[in-house]
Image 1 (cartoon, rainbow, N blue to C red):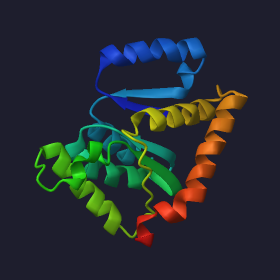
Image 2: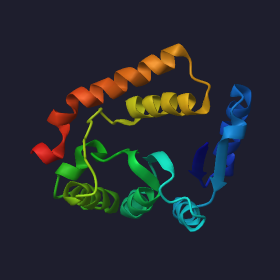
Image 3: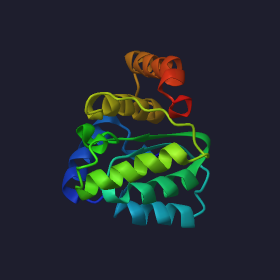
Image 4: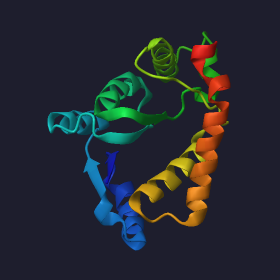
Length: 173
């Protein structure tokens, strides 16, 4: 099952058509509410420790809150992918005081210091295109719609992360 959090009826109605056409609509639990509300409801419903994977790409000023709730929902060994952590390089510029940039800088600092996680950073340009494609294939695989090519793509991404991980891990800096 895939739990999708969104606040847009307009855009999710487009997604629903594609889910139905792919025959996976019954596997997707769409929650139309803020991510914070959805995550809190999942935790309150006893879902803590039951998720294998989470993808965070929402309002940047709440990333820390989403992160904490996501960790509560993840099983041991679960994976979290977070988009926009480099923010087109903006986080490296201390003069950039935009609220989203400051929030992402604080988020990155918190991750670096968090002993509960093993952290790796994959700087994939803007990261969205490659990351979302990989996530899309993973979601297809999880939903049973994946093709052989999808599994190959997932294997390549996982292998690349495993090989690069020692070099990319912030724990080695």
